[in-house]
Image (cartoon, rainbow over all chains, first blue to last red):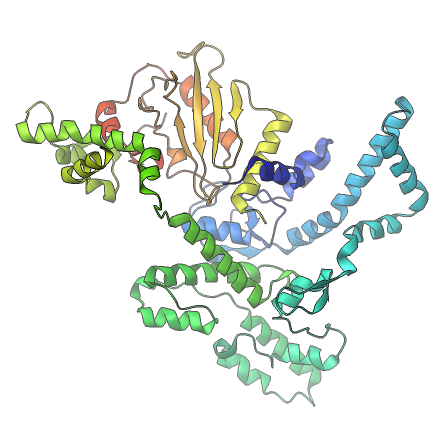
Length: 389
Length: 152
């Protein structure tokens, strides 16, 4: 559980539409946010009803329930998702201008404050004067905004290989397994390699069609080859199909995982969950524009983080059994209480109360889940009550 | 990086603190992102005039993909409203808390729905299977699979 402090910290650095007082800007900020995660759209996709969500959010939601979360249109599936590129551009532009607009609004407010109460907030005045004199043009302000993370050019030590890397580049560096790739644009050869896919990232899974095409004579038909290869690199980027795991053997699932360099550790349930999650994050990543996409290594790291989170959630190891009993005493008491009359009924075979199994079948308003139906047997509960004493 | 559920809840809390709650609903306590409490009153003419109830929300790390566990508080002298869809242990039989939950819904949206559920009540009574249910009810109402047979 988070402490109160960390909550306050999270609350203070969260951006949301209430950053704006003007209703117009507020609704603009709201309109560019996913209604599932409430963040600015990340890889926006539209369903056929027209509602738009982050690709990852809607894929998670559809895994739970095949309907549009906004309008409950129920004839939807992941196959219906279409990239909303215009929305993506709008979000990118808004992300860029949001801090600038906030700065302008803050300055406006200060100016108002200045004229009415000149003595107050001296430090802020100084700051705004400073801004006034130093920043004459918009472009300069934009520059300041871009440099606001002043340490972006600073060198930091890579936590993996300990080489000094620019702060700005550290994530990219880590994503590339500490191998600094040449900047695209620096070498034409690199660009061609990239287009031709000679550093095939998908390895074996690259389909045959693409391979055939890439043997086209590149020297004489440069333009044509580039065209074909763009087509094939897009094919390579096609989303992973969903699998019906029930029909697959463990071995096959492991093969799927190996194809993407994923761990094959764990039981069947873990393997299936891992592959399912991988398909979701992989496909969601493809719904982003090329430059916004994460590297496969980045995705693998995300998958690992997700798995650790899942594990910490499901595992409830009882380390201190006495403390556990104290903590859950009320629950135990309730169980004991629930068990007693039942025991009584079953022994005396009273006719006024139906036996519990009958109850369950005739219950009109609710059905109990499977685990409950295998009702805690009396003896199990007796054990609890013994432990209590 | 905080989890998606914490960030989403932080945003909801921010909105509540900036814009306030709808009439009749008040935030009691939200010190973390696992459990929140609200008081809820029905405004205007209704069977629950001058009554105040306390709602408890519990969130898991899958929120908002998975629904929050919502129930009325029935400890410390507080009571659940007498309503055909509310069990005396505070559990609520409402479809939006179960199979009709949608991740675009929010804590406030749930409060407002429950408020209107109470407001439209015609007769104060407990669910017909109340005694039977509370005898076997799981601690977490999300573990009950309710059957929703009333569309009012």
